Length: 256
Image (cartoon, rainbow, N blue to C red):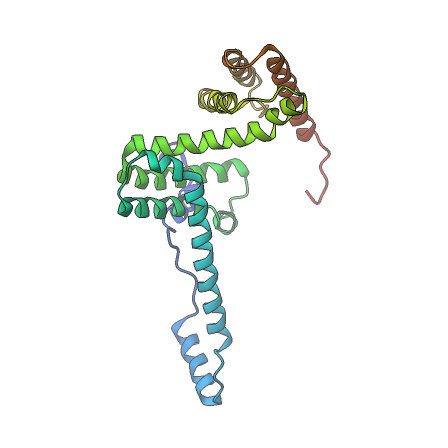
């Protein structure tokens, strides 16, 4: 979605999220700190004033969070980064940008509430705009092809995990497990089809597109799976669709 199609609230949220790389923690005013310091000094107590204790805790929490998200970014992208033949300096810069792109989502809900954005679709559009803005910074460092390599790798890794814990588990329990080559190949097929049909096979938002997605997966999968494995794959897709329908139609309660 182009930025000029966003509402003013969405633009504000997108701008906030895109600009929060290494977001500074909120701190008390200089007057509050000064008063707290004077109070501490006058009382002769060596303990920090409550406001300074809270500030110190926030800074430590942010430091731990930055490091945790950095680890996640490395885990998700290190294999793809190796293909880019970057210098160590560029790798460090890229990891920082990837961390910033991931970390921008942490404060999204709070920011959305403060701006009065409650509709999930409206929020998702603003988040997508923010993510695109941060992706542009990554592309400026490693080029558009480098960014495509990273994002494609992430999609493929997600598909591999979904297959391993989904139809792959069913096939293994039925005594016809996927080989490593089959699992990678099926994951690549699903990743390619998801780009062609973004709604996916179980979203239900566009039945015809979902049907086209399933047909494309089955057609391509037939080239790498055995007939028995194909039969299980069809059963799994049907089960997934039924599950999605049941979850979508579940009763709603006031606490939901």
